[in-house]
Amino acid sequence: MKYRKLGRTGFDVSDIALGLWGMSGWTGSEDRESLASMQLAIDLGCNFFDTAWAYGEGKSDGLLGEIMASNAGKRLYAASKVPPANDRWPALPEYMYSDVFSAKHVFEYADRIRKQLRVDTIDLLQFHVWDDSWTTEPEFRSTVEKLKHDEWIRYFGLSLNRWEPENGIKALRTGLVDVVQVIYNIFDQAPEDELFPLCQELNVGVIARVPLDEGSLGGKMTLETRFPKGDWRAGYFGPENLPKTIHRVEKLKEILPAGMTLPEIALRFILSHPAVSTTIAG
Image (cartoon, rainbow, N blue to C red; front, side, top):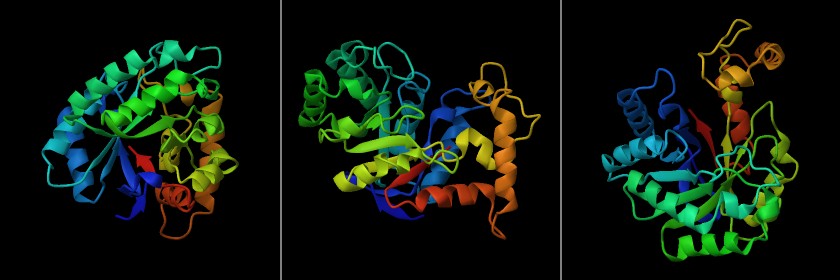
């Protein structure tokens, strides 16, 4: 495993992180297997884990807290997220900041997350959605500053909306945001235009999520691929998107270097960008 600085946090994080969304109760997920997967990742050198309260209403946070407690002698980093109070994804400009991330709501969920993780101070707490129209809200600044002052969190981050990497630029310029999480992969390179250069300028850490395009870059999907009822991927890979995606994947397979798999080249592509601190597998 290789390690990189997570921006100005100074954390030395594994360049491959483990995401815990799939461990929150997805079809086929079992806690025993989830814990075994996390332990294997730790044994292989992974030290950065991304979770969120929305992942099973704290279930993934709790699993991470359990595995961290059983590896108390190792420095493991936990990154979690506060859900939007209005339960709407993604954030939209018409939503009022106070209806989404009031101080009361943020502190309530930060405390819940601390208890699930079994820690007094969360390494990285992120807002699970964001809209840059909220940047000038006084409550945004006061909330983040108090979270840090009271040592509930070490660092603060934003998880940016899908297809909107520029919808966080204003927030980064406030100096309050230490880390951003953004979709970045072979099929979605938009963060390279504006977001990544600014992150490098401000020394903001970058967590690249969806490295395998929700699974397509795993190379195993076909036109016949179907997902269980209730699985959100059924909508993402719907009748319109699935054929286009499979076509692009097959084109990539044609130019794969000898001995390299599709997932490997997908991860190598992401980590080749100097702005990226880590990418979330899983």
